Amino acid sequence: MKEAFGATPSFLLWLRYSTFLVMYPIGISSEVGLIYLALPHIKVSEKFCIRMPNKWNFSLDNFYIAFIALGIYVPGSPHMYRYMLSQRKKALSKSKRE
Image (cartoon, rainbow, N blue to C red):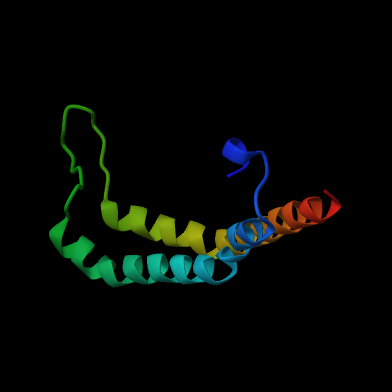
């Protein structure tokens, strides 16, 4: 809207920066829940795992990568949420000044 018409209606700007308040926690919790529920299947299937010996002398286990992802999501999600709140505050306060 802004690129086409030069301005964005205030309700669309508010909607853009406010829907994450509900959608973000739902998205993060569903991703974490799905990773957690998939862990037993990942361990049994060993899909996309690289076992040694191979020509690269390298081993990779997808089960542990999923644990690392959980370890990043859990402490990282509050930080990302606070960042989005600050972006919302900045964008909505800028629109009120204009």
